Amino acid sequence: MENYFNINHILVEILNYKLSHLEFWAVITGLIAVYLSSIENVWSWVIGLVNVVLFFILFYQVQLYPDMFLQVFYFITNCIGFFLWKFPKKGNENQRNELKISRMKNSMLLGIGIICILSTILLGTFSSHLHTLFPTVFSLPSSYPYIDSFTSVLSILATFLLMKKKLEAWIVWLVVDIILTVLYAFKNIQFVAIEYFIFCIIAIYGTINWLKIYKKSN
Image 1 (spheres, one colour):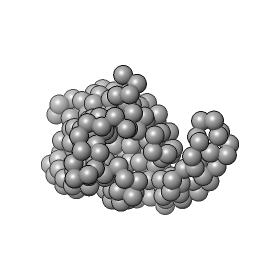
Image 2: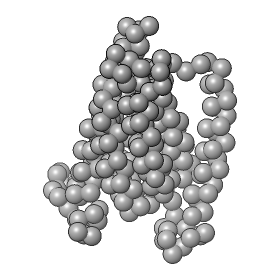
Image 3: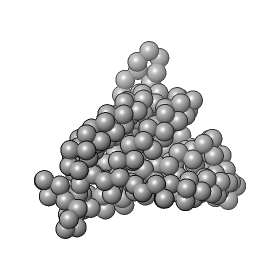
Image 4: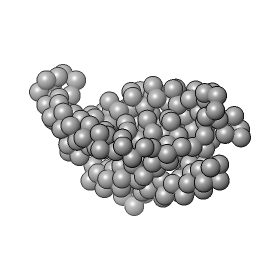
């Protein structure tokens, strides 16, 4: 079982690319979860729990430590997101008695931007020194610590927005997905890179679909 979750345990080789069992199932569960979110299906959060556990193991093995830590956050927010969507406050429910889609206030954008920049600098600096601070746990230095940290910070923001069913969540996710598609390609986890390219398409679809639902409900 331990070998099954090792990135070197190969499921299939496609065009000289060795696809592991771990990477395959992490990608599949991720695609299902994100698609379900784009169609407002509350069970996306449950599938997401499986997905974050698999990605936690994967990112540790490819030295993307900020992404690895992010999975812990995702695990918690998947639990919270399910209950926020499923049991909304009175007046915030849609026709299915689940949380309805809403928009962000423009006054929040500047503050959020400043917080994201400062958080990226702090997290990037910390992750770039992980292999010296905790050498027994992190034997290799973090790869692309500041880029990885930037996408991690934006992912946290997007997750909070998604938990509250804010339409802008999909725009933030699209930015994250574009950057991570390139990053994972460089790290030679190509199947994950393909997944994030598909996420870009789903993010565009999610934006259009949620906007349509938002306009209809308002």
